Image 1: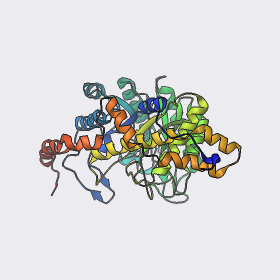
Image 2 (image 1 turned 135 degrees about the horizontal axis):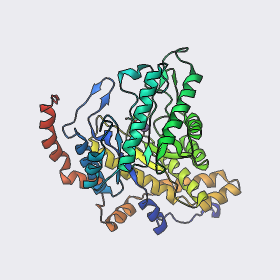
Image 3 (image 1 turned 45 degrees about the horizontal axis):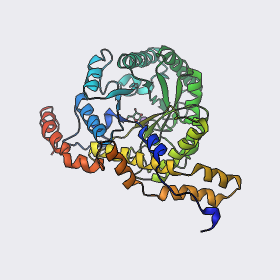
Image 4 (image 1 turned 90 degrees about the vertical axis):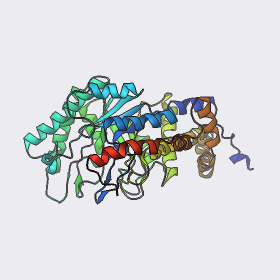
Length: 401
Ligand code: PSV
Ligand code: MN
């Protein structure tokens, strides 16, 4: 082989495995419940009905992978505003932590024309009050992140004053930021379209970063990997935000067209690998693990939900492991000599390395199943849950025929 391309072998050594072991992935409560498309729901007998069911499912994923100690919750879907003690207890008894609190200012009828951007001051007030109530839930359960998705936007040119709406968002997010305990971060999520189709008030990472900067020092950007226009270079966004100390977290999923909520890495594993590589480079530059929340945001209509989550976690670990394998010194040396092919080969070599056997032994060394997906199937969890949940669903009026 040409000496120029002779690189050190790709091995997952102890520091790399240690870093992998510190990758904690948060599960979304809503990913375990029956959900659908805008055309209908395909129900699953084993899907969760209650918050307790969702936490049971999250516990199963954590038991199998050892990587998912926290669960993101959605206010209104999981609990109403107010007493959060039952939520805290339900998580604790299962050895889990409540992670990000996702307020809900998009489903109530009053938000038809916007929440914190509504022309009606009483609706704006109601939305802010809900965000503040969500902060209180977070405080009560010891959550470290409030993750509001502001779905506001318009469908037609002229429908709203983009500037007035921008200013209302700035005001609202600053109010929320200032109400948060010091231990909490405000993660601002962006999305270019849906549910509105002409303009979205927080359409991209640049707007989210501007809103975050205005809100205060504990406000950062949340990158949902499904929330980009086709062709967006997501790893560039990630590298840029990380270097600006503005990257607060991820909502991981994959997509082919829009916000498809598909299993991480199912469509384009190379992109997820490059996103992880951007993080590895940022971590090397800063000399420490970045304080980022890695969260899954996926809602599966067709795949069994627990399986899809296990698959996503295992895929995240595999792709992070591959990114950790990139020889960053060799990469930098190739860049220094302006060797484009050499640099690209550093990436290709790591991405092509099959890490599955190494990860299987790593899992076993940590007392975990070598193959979490296989262990899940062998456990019979899915059919046990179907047996206990289906009758409850049918008696609640669900139709599974
Ligand atoms: C919106 O598409 C979103 O990504 C937000 O994060 C919501 O909280 C979540 O999906 C709901 O499924
Ligand atoms: Mn999301």
